[in-house]
Each structure stands twice: as structure tokens, then as C-alpha cells.
Length: 520
Image 1 (tube, rainbow, N blue to C red):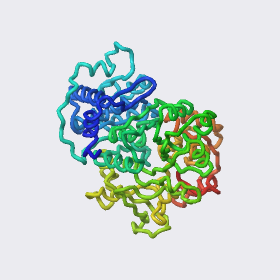
Image 2 (cartoon, rainbow, N blue to C red):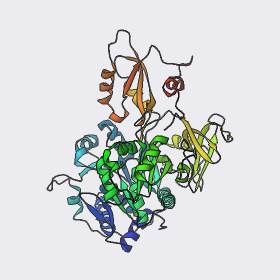
Image 3 (tube, rainbow, N blue to C red):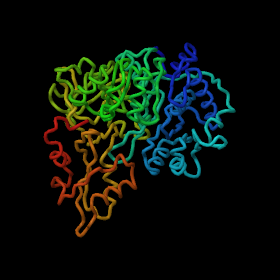
Image 4 (cartoon, rainbow, N blue to C red):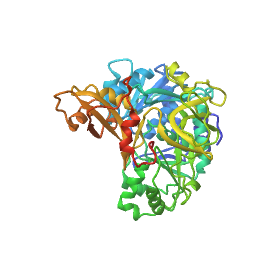
């Protein structure tokens, strides 16, 4: 498949194999032709609300099928889908809706209350995917009266396709505008690297508000294969499906591999069909890899990527994972149509192999812009964009050695916990609202399960009596739980320069002593 955009891919698959299963779960199955027909119907319904080129439509929920429908319905009329993190608080959801300008929100019933509260009394139309059959807000009832045919429209490679949110160091998420060119490129290079074809069977258990989960919706449509979907990750259910559904390819985070290995049923099932277990979000340890190779008997590959590069930058291949290769600490080599530079973040001079600097990335998968943030976009592309995507400043620190990328730290102090990107500034803003906190900082510390966990280092006001539980409870009432500190350390003072700048590296150092890699 070599289509210029993913709409063409879906239409092509609907013509070539109309009745072939695209997405399947224990409760539903949808074929390629039905997917295309329902996307057309939803697109026409959206057009009745004057949704069109440049518009934004949001989705809040766990359903991969509904997300895929909205993604393609939006693409077909020149709009872009905004997947919303269902772990967000109402205030965080409201910010995404307002910042993106979304005029429609489609929500699972599970999150309908948060969605309605965030949408407010006017401006955003809210539809539900799985509510009572006679509810006028039910999505399929609304769509039923619209035509399931839609004239094709011209789509330019650099048109906005998906509008995702990636947390920013200022404490507010940034809208990342991804293009048709970038998403097609991501599908193409992954399909080649993983040897995907129509006989492949994928397993999808990642949230679609992350780029990895979103790509897993797009791969089967690009390739024309079947994808078994899971509303949530449950180790035993997932393991039994790997065996029973003859899954060939899986994309997970290392914490999920740990949970699978910890479940006793993993030693009783046949995984002979499994060809590749790809993982991202953090490196894998040698003991976990050895156990996983023994249990699953398949190849392993690590993917390093960012939302801004459509999730695909480098890959540590199956061959690189062989015993004795000594490359497990590496993030791998650049994927096709990708170039890397290591740049001194202060002088902007290129650095030679082995020297740590900021990772700069040039790729046709580079994002178009940070939504309505021209200055941030210019900072991300200091040399401007060009036909090859321009050089993007990733904010990650690392070095190159013999063509392999090794990540060593984060320029912007981001914490990655269980595949979730957490920026300390947002958490610290909430921490400092606690009446007993005089000073505070948030860092990532090693976690055997999640890669990193969030720790708050707190200086209490004189006479204050708050303990760790008080502070954690205070935080959990105000921001998404995955961002909240798991632990709190009370200190007399935080390390700062004479000018008052917080020395986060000094703060992290004791917790990372003895660990080879301070980034996951």
C-alpha cells in the first residue's frame, strides 16, 4: 500500500477486501467497507454542524473503534480529530476543548459527566457512544439519518490530520498538529520495519490519546490487516488473546511486559504465532528481556519517538537485542527518512560522537506547528522548516555512537511513568497551592515497575503539620492521578543557585545513583 493519505488507504481497502475484519473485540467486529461507510455517515453528520476544513472535533473515551471513526470522518471533510486524555481532570479537559477550538465532543458514557462539565453550557456539541438506546445524544442515532456516501475531496500532504496534546514545560499542554504526510510516513516505515502485511494480526491495548495508541489505529488501515482491540489492558485477557487470536505483532510499554510475565497463565499458553513484540516509552532490562524471550519466543524491537515526530524516530532492531550485543541501553538507529544531530544547547554547535547534547531530528514526520503558538514553533525549529521537515529540537539529551542513539537525560526535565509523559512544572504549580508548602519541586525517581515515578520534595512552612498523605490527597483532588506524586520527601531546603534557580540535577542525583540511564 502506497497511498498519499490515509483516507485513500481506507477507501482502497474497502474496495479490495470489503468484508475483511478490520477491528475485532469480544463484543464487536467491524469490516473495512463498514468502517468506510460509517466514517462517511459521520462526516456528513459533522458537515450538518458546519464542521469542515480547519475545524477540530474531540473524542474522550476508551473505544478505539469510535476514535478511528472520528479520525477518518474528520479527515474526509478537512477537519482534524483531537483525542483527549480521559485521565485528565475536568479543568484539563476544558482547557483542551477551549485551546483547540473543538466544536464537537464525542464521549464514552463512562466519561460523559466530565465531558459535559468541561464542555459547559454552550459552544460544544456533546454526543455519547454507548448510552441508552433512546438517548437523543447517542452518536449512532444522530448519524443514522445521514447519507453513507461522500464525494472524495483533495487532501494536501501538509494538511492537518490529527491534533494531539503533548504536555509543555509551562504546565499547560501544547497542541501538536500532525500532517497526512507525517502519518503516512510513520505507517510506511513501521510496516517495512515490522514486515507487516495483510496476514498480520495486531493487538491494541494502548490509549489512543497517545501517539503510539493512535498509530495502532492507523497501521491496520494502511496495511489492510486485522487488529484485535482491548478497551483496557488486563494481563490475563491480553495473554489469552495473544494465543487464541493468533496475534502476530504487539506494541506495548515495558511495564506491560512485566505484568504479562508476572501472570502465571503466561507459562501455560502457546504464543507460536507471535512474530514481534515492539515496545517504547522506556528501555528494557536484560533480565526482563531474557524472561520475555523465553516465554514469548518472538523478536523484540524498541521504538523511540515523540508526538512531534509522529512517534517514530529510531528503532533498536531484533538483531540489536541479541544476547551479547550490548545495545539494550541504546534507543537504536534512525528510521528511514530520519536524520539526527547532537547539538550543544547553548552554542548550537554540532557535537562529535560520544558527546552529550540535545537531540535534533529532521524527518518528513515532523509536526506542522504547535497550535496557536508561533513562538514555541519557531523555538522548536530554530533553522526553520524545509522540504525534509526541518530540524526539530527534541528537548532530549543524548549522544551518538557508531550510528546508535543513546539517551542520557531530559533537557526539559520530563518524567515518563508507565509510558505517560509528565512535566514537573504543571505538578509543581498545584503543589505550591498547598497552604503548608513553602517551597517544592517534582522529580522522576527510579521505579522497578513504571520506569519512573513522581516524587515531590517539599519544604514546609514553619509550624506546618502536613504529612505525605495530606499532600498526595491534596494533589489527587486537583490533577490527573497519574501525574500526582507517589512519594513525598520533606527537606530543609531545595538546592538552588545564588540567583534562585532550582538545581534539579542535584535534586535527582541521590535517587539515580547506581543507575546507568537517567531517562526512560
